[in-house]
Structures are given as C-alpha cells and as structure tokens.
Image 1 (cartoon, rainbow, N blue to C red):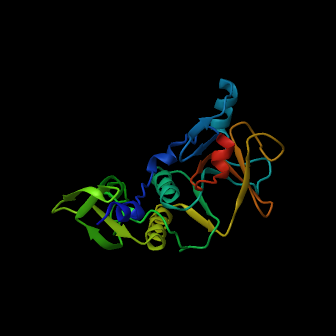
Image 2 (cartoon, helix red, strand yellow):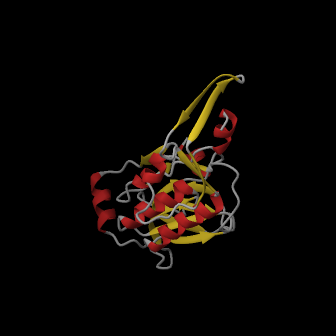
Image 3 (cartoon, rainbow, N blue to C red):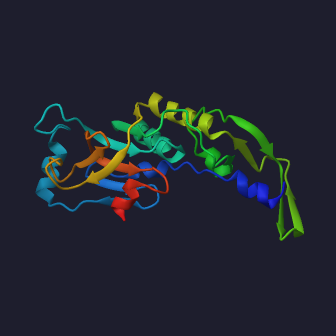
Length: 223
C-alpha cells in the first residue's frame, strides 16, 4: 500500500471525552475546543442544582446534554453521556445513514474506544503500509496483526448512533443548528444554554457538545 493510499484511507477517532462537559452547570463545548463553564455565584449555583429541569414554561424541556452532530465524535459523546445517566438529545442535520467521503480508516485506539459489543463493519484489513518520499526511499512496515481496518462511514456512523440510542440518547435528524445563546430572553437562567434551530425552535440544555465538523456553529461560538 502506498503512502498516498494510506493518507486517503484516513483515520477517525471517536471521542467519548467530548461528552465530559459538566451537566451540573451551563457549558458549551466543541469536540476540538473543549468545554467552557459559565461563571456564577455560589448561591445561584446551589439553587439551580436543586431546581427541576424545567423552566417557568412547563413545555420547555431542559436536556442535560445536547450533542450537535451525529458523526463518530458526536455519537460517542452521546453514548458516554447516556451511559453516565444523563438525558441526552443528539441532533443531526442529515438523515441517517448519510454518505461521508473521509475517515475510512480505524486504528487501534479508535477501535478500543468503541462501545462494548460493537461489531466493526470492516471492508478490508491492512497488514502492510509503504512510506516513500517523492516515490523514492520506500520503506514498508508489515505486521501479522492488523495495522488498521477500512470501513464505510455511513454504516459505521449509523451503528454508533444506534448504540447511543440503546444507551438512552434521543436522536433527531433533519435539523440544523443556527446558533447558540447563553444570554437573552430564550435563556431561562444562568445555567442553561439555548440551541436555536433553523426552523426557529429553541432547545434548552445544561451542556452542549459541538461535534458538527470543520464549519462547526458550536466551535465558532466557543471561539
């Protein structure tokens, strides 16, 4: 396998750590930028902890965690939060399964991060990789063990989402997030984040995880 082929295979690293945003307080985080807690005085923090997860409008449900993006990072974050006992909403702008061109290579650390019992939909197993410089000085690494496996992202992503749902996460597809608000009339208190959707609906959460790719709305909000 040439270095070009190895590069095109790509790797995808599910990131369960992306779900580590504290649900005890309002937080907004990106899978790349991490999470940022909001400041608050001790008295208001204590009152918010004791308050039920409802606003004055009883129809306005407050989720513990809202995850934006149902790729490997987002599905893994939703799974980890749901397994931890949080009420999780997973938002995805496309219908699943959807086609993705990148990230078809799974290496050991990514494989080891998958939920228990996850069956990798491997299309091929790679046991040798050749590295070269401008077509010269080629060096091949071979192994009896699989160096990495190749998968189809639509099938792989859908299976991860299914595991998150089995753990208790709720999935909504066909929804686009336009912005996140931490202040304003849509935000009932200092420990809640408002996620505004393209159709004007507002979803409330104690924590938001951004796993919505390179053009992430959540990442732009976090900065």
